[in-house]
Length: 550
Image (tube, rainbow, N blue to C red; front, side):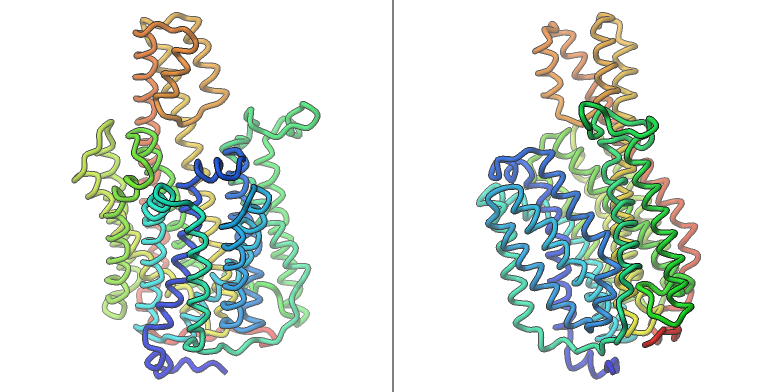
């Protein structure tokens, strides 16, 4: 059996939390570095933006599809074994990525091998934390992990921008392999977790992977394919758009995913009823604390990923900052998130998770509103920094509690399953956040730009018509210099070109403000779920839940 007494944490000290935090850091850093280094990667691999975006999509897809399965393997093998096996797989993928000569090797090394390693490591991190620490120490450990996760996301552009500009993006992935080896070298300080002997529900694994994969793929491709009405970017077969019944592939994929997940749920209930071990015991979702924690975590992932989608667009596309300056600008958010994640975890025991998360969402809401107010063509350093600090403080307070709420809902030996649910919640929230906010941003951009052009007294009708058609057919958030070059190439005189650029610039800011306003509204709505969090501090032993064939 696993020893979860206080002496385990005392013997291990905070070394275990440090190792788990290091693993968490490189997991989160990975995607942010790839996003900010996209132009250099495209050049090095002699590929296209679309090709690299496909690799990024596939990486997210692999994690979303197999996270529940990774959590189950963690229970069957023991969390410690799943952790080091996952790290070896992840480190191998990082090394392959660092030496990738072309897009095909990048897809194998990063999108697939790293992704498969991550689905073992991420649930294991949650399970090992639950097994190693107890009471307030556990709350502090989850606060450290939450703070490190946010700090890594915010520091990613800074690290990736500096390394890419000074050396090469490959160095980041090579360094990840080294970090993996260092963590494995000190693996002995991590306590072992007793595995659970059970047969893997293969049918359930297939249904969950296909269902989650289809759902997330549809969400991720919504900006290129459209949600319901197919956009010009939908795939084509023999020159004809792939749009059955005139509907976007996005809608079909989401519906197929939903149907498969319903079938998965029915199968899991049937498997449990006959006395076998399901891939996911749906009784976990009936635990009020678990369900509330997962929903709040989903909201947190939605907000943080959507915000990190909007901020670089403003700083890089509108203001013209490079990735390094972007990372420096958002540093207040990173520092505040880490500090308040630690501070919030220290408050566990004195205040309830419900109260701390409520204060976090209030700070988050204030931060979004401050950013909205100071979003201008020129950066207001102190005002924008204040908004970022408030946003980071709110996300940090949320991160300090949610992981502990989820993992304290079950016994440590159910940690793999709970960790898989936690990882799935994060992936779904992040994917939907970026997709929805991206759709709002592009729709608002196209609408405002077209409206601004149509009301212009100086632009000729022929130009108005061409711009309106182009904006609705292929709206894209690009620097104003590209709009200026396109207008000059079309032969527009200087005054009309200037007006076109000014109108587009105004439309950009309006679209960004609409996105931040939506996130502020979403944060307000998230408060409705916070009241379902426990009013007692989750530092005591979890309520024992039934275990099938444990």
